[in-house]
Image (cartoon, rainbow, N blue to C red; front, side):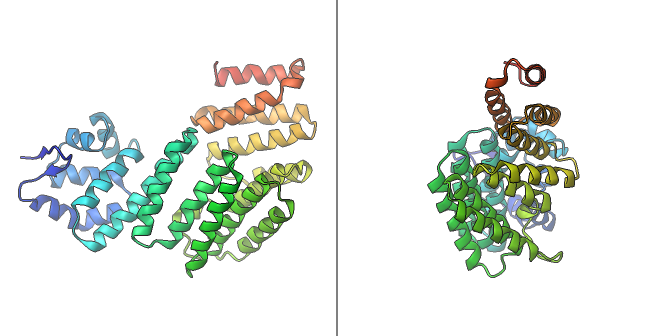
Length: 345
């Protein structure tokens, strides 16, 4: 009979079922591609572990486990907890390495979840866990990615010196990895530009931007890019370039760049489009274009309301605060009315 011990692990008697599960090719493939719907299903079917037990071990509700199995909902934090538990159960080094890689990615994603909720201390703890897991299996590209995440967070927290130190550590890791792709180097150079811009270092920012664009031009379609860097496409390069210019107070150059990037955007990434629209609105406001700024920010409200994000809500509130000198203007009042519908007080 399956039962949970005081240590929080599953006791399967002889452990034969667990051993078969951890060496099952389908389970290994599911772990490798982070398909936790399949992972939970196999745990239930082959190891005979009831969803309520999975829920207890993963700090989830049984209904949430059922939704994950049905493919209806991700559960990153619970998945991380579960995979870390599997790491402790596994004696196979190849499988252990695969699970470690999965756990590192889940820790990074959990960190981003907390970052997006502006829970920065928790985010940093998960990013640190991700880095430790990646270091354990000497995943050098990933060891570059995590400090880059921490650098961006430090930029948002106005910890500019930390931001620069983190991204320099990320670049050191990427340089130590001969397989690091041009896209990785371009993304890291852009994060370096953010750090220099937050420090007010104009020359260093422009040099980092030039390097980001130079590396981006070296990208080939057959480059073996890690999955976590594929988001860094041409529109993102342009948007981030605008953000760096904006941090330096170079609003005129920033406005043209972000508008161009938004024209190039495709797909259904509503969250990204809302962020980009707000950056454009803030830039237009800096240039004294009140009407355009309010209209652009209003355009951001629909995608923002569709994607709950504390960080996005924070940007909306910051933009609202910047409208204080224009409270009596009709266009400002219209934006405020729409904002109250999306973010009720």
